[in-house]
Image 1 (cartoon, rainbow, N blue to C red):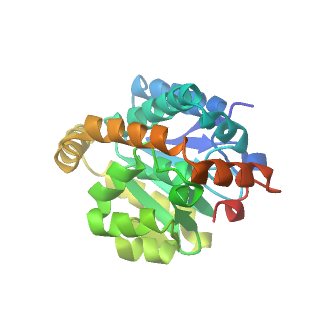
Image 2 (cartoon, rainbow, N blue to C red):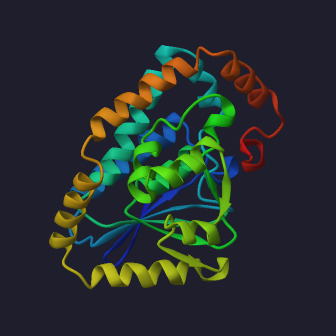
Length: 260
């Protein structure tokens, strides 16, 4: 089975992360699948918006432990991060509104994937967060820049520097979640938002999101370069070595609880 599949519902395309047995943890194969799926949507006609969601009990528990194990060297970090950044940026550049439909959890790189979408519908009981600094690294696939653009520097610092885990209700209060809904109504709430998007001009929406993104992050390339430079420094610190080994040795390394 492909780790990412495309489902069509009229003019709505769903990108479904399909590794429920690994809590939709993000590995190289899934990221390649995501990039390929977005590329397919780029050349598909008749689509008015895109929903990104996770199969099974959650959106994504973050980077897969097997992939994380390869990030302890500069060569591995550069190679894998390049693939993640390319896929996330490709998704963000789609000239269509994108909606992350989040339930269960969106943690680390999983949260950064949700941030790469234009809008987010989140269940009230979902868990979201960037736990990287607790592991001796930084969010490095665009999470810092996207969170600052969304919340401002003060709130972004609070969440990143404390590695805070928040629920969907607080995500709504902060402005991370566009809509907050009970878990049982996630599909209906997502559909209601896509209906609103489909009522607007697809061309105008595509142009508007491009202008907004450029205005919100005028130095995007430099931000991504800064993330990489910071991460290369972090992986050579004792703090990272200790946290990295502790995480990989822990039972259930791909559970959301292990990333708290």
